Amino acid sequence: MVGYIDDKEDLRRRLARIEGQVRGVDRMVEEERYCIDVLTQIGAIQAALDRVALALIDDHTRHCVVEAEGGEREEKVDELLAALGRFVGR
Image 1 (cartoon, rainbow, N blue to C red):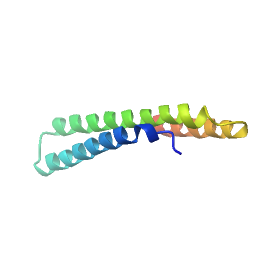
Image 2: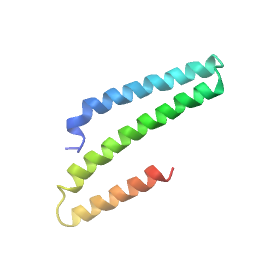
Image 3: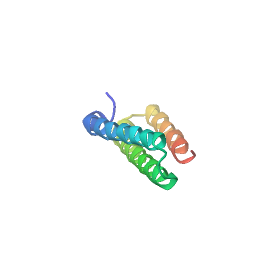
Image 4: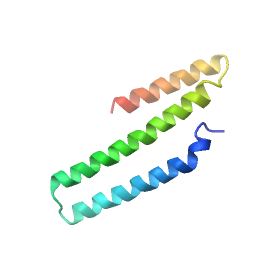
C-alpha cells in the first residue's frame, strides 16, 4: 500500500486543478497574452506542483520510512534523500 492512499483524492483534485491551469496558460499563449501574465500563471502552477510534491514527501516519510524496519528503513531514507535532491536540484 502506498503512503499517500489516505490523501489520494485530495492529490487528484489538486492535480486536476493544475491540469486546468496548464490548459489556461496554453490558451493565454494562443491568444498572445502579455508575457508577465503568462509568467505569473506559470509561477502559480510551479507552486501548486511543489505543494503536491511536498504532500507526497510528507506521506512517504510518515508511512514508508517510519514503518520500514531494519535495512529496509535505510533504503527508504536513501530513496527519500535522492528524491529530495532531485526536487531541490531542478
